[in-house]
Length: 175
Image (cartoon, rainbow, N blue to C red; front, top):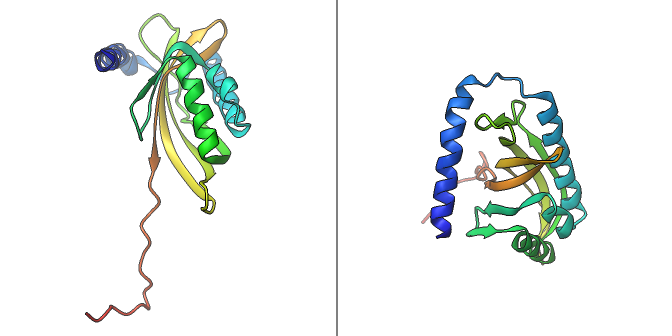
């Protein structure tokens, strides 16, 4: 049932985004842009403070996170538990989100739903390991509640570090 929900949600988003995308100018609505910047700023602050409750408050009650390293997480309560568990396992620092310059994009004609893309960077450290700089890209579908955007659907990836290049002075091994 949850897979059908995600498939239906994706179809819904694509169905409404395609006609709107063709009409959207490159300049986002300034009020929505400010709301998106506030949402990502609050996300970064809560993340850097390792505050799972503050992060969860940025999601709608029926939000879904689709992770690159596991299955979906449904609902604000489960999302708060997920972030609390993450912060106990991995130590993150310096998380910074940057929405792409044309986000957010209005979905459909209601004006209360948008999709946004961007990138993030952060430093993480796992037990018995050194700090590692990572970066990735995110996609959100956000809903306006009162005068603020909240995450409704969120997904991201982590871009792998470039492969190490062999030294130009290294000699091939003799086997």
